Amino acid sequence: MRHHDLIVIGAGSGNAVVDGSFAGLDVAVVEEKWFGGTCLNAGCIPSKMLAFAAHVASTVREAGTYDVDAELRAVRWRELRDRVFGRLDAAREEGRRGREADDGITVYGGRARFTGPRRLVVELPDGPVEVAADQIVIAAGGRPLVPPPVADSGLPYETSDTVMRVDAPPRHLAVLGGGYIAAELAEVFSEAGSAVTIVEKEERLLGPQDETVAELFTDLARDRYDLRLGREVTGVGGRPGALRLTLDDGSTVEADMLLVAAGRVPNSDRLDLDAAGVKTRDDGRIVVDAYQRTTAEGVFALGDICTPVPLKHVANREAKVVAHNLLHPDDLVSADHDGVPAAVFTRPQIASVGATEQDCRDRGLEYLVGTAQYADVAYGWAMEDTTGFCKVLAEPGTGRLLGAHLMGPQAPTLIQPLVLATTLGIDAATLADTPYWIHPALTEVVENALLDLGL
Ligand SMILES: Cc1cc2nc3c(=O)[nH]c(=O)nc-3n(C[C@H](O)[C@H](O)[C@H](O)COP(=O)(O)OP(=O)(O)OC[C@H]3O[C@@H](n4cnc5c(N)ncnc54)[C@H](O)[C@@H]3O)c2cc1C
Ligand SMILES: NC(=O)c1ccc[n+]([C@@H]2O[C@H](COP(=O)([O-])OP(=O)(O)OC[C@H]3O[C@@H](n4cnc5c(N)ncnc54)[C@H](O)[C@@H]3O)[C@@H](O)[C@H]2O)c1
Image (cartoon, rainbow, N blue to C red):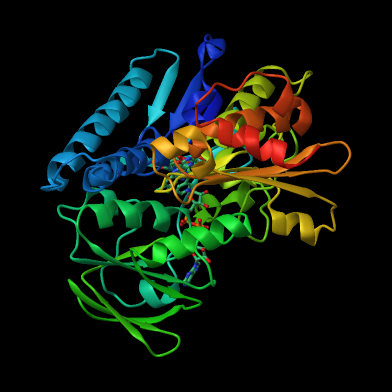
């Protein structure tokens, strides 16, 4: 059995663990499917490249608002798809080749599972190979959750792993779930010409967002999509290309394609973790301590397979923490999961950090609310924006920022000063009054929301 100093399972964020500081060590990377993981191949990056094209299309369609005559003739889906994945598939192969060319790194192209403490078998195309290591990092991510009525139907469905690569947009896309993926990809396909129906079991899209954001986003979505809220799919019938979804109130949705976007599950159930002494939570996430150590000696985990916040910037941070802790066992560092910002790349865009207003209420916190509209700042006038807003939540007296929520153009960029203030402990009044805020930039909407707190 080959013995390595370190084995990393999963070449998504796990691949980032191994940098120059591991030179001289015998390292192995095991990847069963695609170097770069979900983010590069089927997640953050392709979805944002497609969302940007959708944004260009909508800008052309709405050019008349700005007294510009323009006509949208077509979204050339195949060319768009081939440009996106031509670039990303090349980046994936370059990443893999770079690792394979590194003398200190062995790449195993297959699925790993544990056979004992720090011992694995990897299913390679030409047969299984047994390997062991002093230290192991589990970075095996997650996969789309497919509810039983869809999985058991025997009829075809897409997930985020496949839908961005289809040959043509469907005439009618049914989306199961109304969270991040549904919001972003419904828009992509809608701009590419598909009619969209979204089936969501809660009463609002993007339910965990601040209630003002979720409510307004749902209202705006109602004008663009057929929304079936508070509904679940109980059965899928029909035939490939002519599907019929039955919902729990007996109503039906006809669609030629079904996108399942009902959340993700960690891949921990495919690793025989019991053999390694690695424990999981009820929801399947691997148990880790503050230093990303699992319950098994010498085994670390990072990213979607263990994290409370399944986002790429969090997985990247955890990868840095693991890299440090592998090499410095006497000087461990931890990843802070407070104040993680998030964004939804829709139109309007959405960004948030910290508590929502409903969180504050549920936790019995005293809080002040400051709001400002894009329509009330000069750049918002230039954009003729009518719906964008910034909402900040702060502790009375101290002005400590509890949360911030933006919905409107450039929200994921505009939120950054609020992320800095939340992370670095800068109170709302200091943030509003001390730095200059460029006039007439969109950031004035953040400044105005802070001033609206009245501190
Ligand atoms: C459509 C979509 C859009 C997203 N957009 C964003 C966004 O805009 N911003 C953001 O922050 N996050 C976004 N995310 C989330 C982000 O992609 C994930 O949080 C991130 O990719 C997690 O990284 P990871 O390394 O933990 O897992 P992954 O990137 O999934 O990597 C895990 C790797 O392990 C491999 N693997 C699994 N099991 C085994 C095994 N047994 N043996 C060998 N290899 C194995 C897999 O093939 C995979 O390559 C998005 C996700 C999706 C699905
Ligand atoms: N911009 C981003 O950062 C971004 C974009 C896409 C995905 N992601 C990541 O990927 C993860 C997965 O995205 P997602 O959209 O699949 O999950 P999600 O958790 O955001 O949304 C899933 C939605 O499906 C609904 N749902 C679940 N089961 C259902 C059922 N049987 N019937 C009807 N509705 C049902 C849930 O109520 C929820 O609203 C996200 O949690 C996020 O971590 C991030």
